Image (tube, rainbow, N blue to C red; front, side):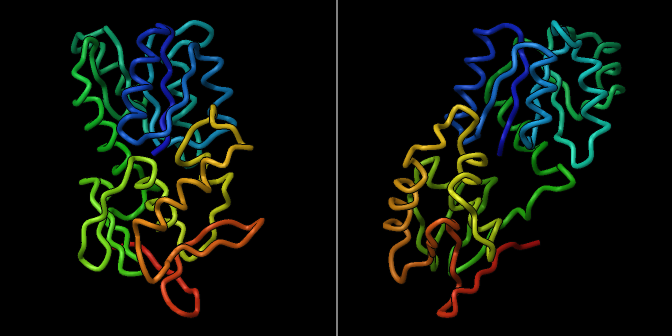
Length: 230
């Protein structure tokens, strides 16, 4: 899941972003509305955590702009305004959820995951292929019925590959989906993570690599793949 945190209180933005990254999310930060609008034009996000009172471009205006987009991200308004009128007003602008500051971080995580599942373009809940079954909600993965003990990034890479299967995902696409805009495009992070994931998945190997093309889950001797469950 890729999240944009739009919050002008820098300390809070950094705390929220770091906490969400610990939960396996790829997180970018914008400190004002104009910066957020530019990032939304450049990157694809599943959910935007949006402070309402922003400099540059007010959160209300930004929320309205987001709702006009095709394949738009879901919006969670995160604000100190906690009256019923404020909540109704925020939801009336097109926000999909509303959370009042101060908030409990576990609740924020649950709400973000819930919004990502509700997104019209969200992937199937259970992802399957090559004997692997992955549940993004329960954060569990098995191969041939045996539980896989994966790191946060290994889990997200496996989810991305299963979602894309049978197509290839380039290293650049994995960096964008699993890490965030601060990831070094020249790093070998993707190759190292895929290497660890291969070892944990065991034999026979199921991740195919084609130089200059990328990676994919191979679901059989012919290299075909498949994923997804209603």
